[in-house]
Image (cartoon, rainbow, N blue to C red; front, side):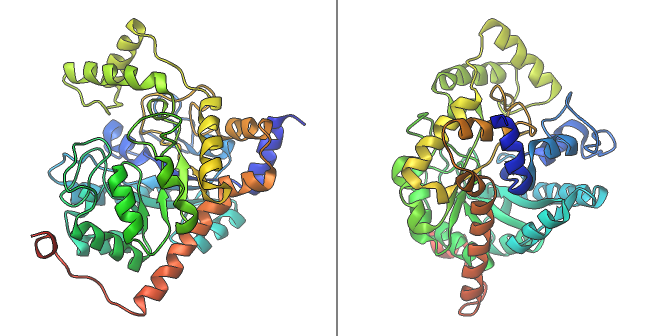
Length: 392
């Protein structure tokens, strides 16, 4: 049996729980949520990284759908609600394949039914508009993690890719973390500054996640996780979910990406735009400036290092499909996960360890957050603190 065959066999039993997929935003940008125009029951290779046939081929058993909206939108809260509505439409349209999931038990039930457990994660604290009531509203609608920032600071938390603002988390930011703990919403530390990571880990009483981040020691990009933070995961119980984005995993891609982003802005486009017009500009730039190419091995290098620092019980996978213009060779879309598992098998990873990576760790961490929430709800009610009352 080849390594790839072994990988597919393992994924049939312990499929991937993927921490981050931006399909809802791609559907918003490409077709304004017209699901007839992007019917994911059939291959959408020409338009998307994600569809149901390729999720099945890739051995995906659970997916956190990102309900991301850009941090510069003036109407971030209603736009987030539209993203949630998109996921709900997908669940209603494809019930034989996608199972709504709110708990760790729901994820396991979906696996038993042969369906893909579908959860939601909000990407960026701007989605709550500095309102703990709105945070609770998102949880009530099914959101099970929130990334504390996206690419820009918000008034209570610093981003990895912005200038320092409050120096990590403000007092209100720490209250956001505590309220997330009380709800059972996972605190996601992808995208945040290292100072914010440390402050959040000091403030939290529940395990945290990094829904789509890799190792800063392997690729020195501020979006990645420093070793001192990885070293804290065993004590916290959290999970770091390695991402595949080339500019976060391949050092040579960092400088190239800075130039490519500047080229996008010079053409009047947002540097994260993946519409057809934007991709035409990207491709023209790439023809003139060949892109450094990440591979499956590049991603495996991150996992090897992260395992050494944090331990096998604290690793997962968060591909960031449909949220990136470029992907590594061998990981071009959601069908590629078996290639990564095969690479890790070739590197000597055991099947029990790979089962933790793909399935068990991510399910455990959500269950642990639920346990913490149950205890906290027995001792305190909802927080009605405001940013004005805590931060002045």
